[in-house]
Length: 277
Image (cartoon, rainbow, N blue to C red; front, top):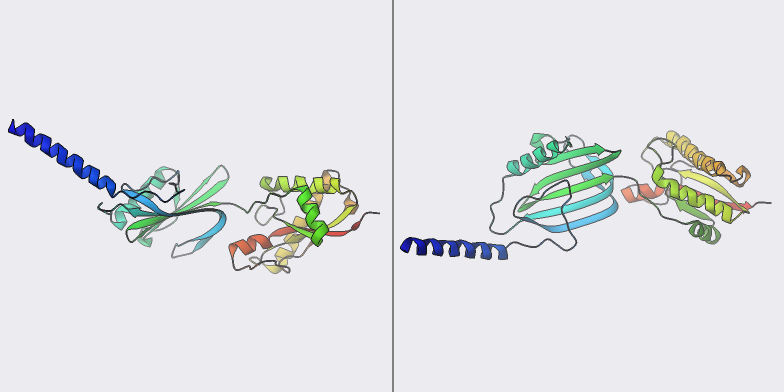
């Protein structure tokens, strides 16, 4: 009888400990979530979280820092109160193994005190960094990509009539004048603009940021402006209503020292010239 009483007391004690322990398990910050490819460490919670459609993050490999632009997510994890924290080696070794098993390529070295990995799949590139910190760890993810723009033909016409020009974010293959699929909707709206305003004549201007060779950027900007003109004429817009010109890096509209600024400088502009006779 005493044995069963002792066992019952022990079970009640364990249940009480579990209940009290659950009181110290902190909740994740509002509107935060784990990244699908990375499970959180047991007995940890999210204490800070940001999710930006377009930003940049510099991955901290000591040999060569790599800045990647695109959809960025920052997750800060903290260990729950009263739980045993893993060693730095244990944390990083577990995440490294999990990423490798999932097909990621490990970019960092064992002595780097962090894990950096890259995954290229279905023409998409994703980078991740796991870095221990006091009382927890950070996970930073960048789904590489260009800034996207949603603009209508009426928006363009309104801006052309009010200011004489409109800046458009048209994405091209890197170092080339091939318009990416995700920018085709912008091209379609440009075509609609020219159809809606049959007397409109515009100059299509190509502009770049300052990260490349100036002469090469000049040529590239001309090629990209011409590519846009070709897309419009191929859709039936008369060539005499369009001119194409490249300006390279000579006319920035934002600070090239920031990723957001460089993204704004890599643009195509439509400039209103005159009415067709």
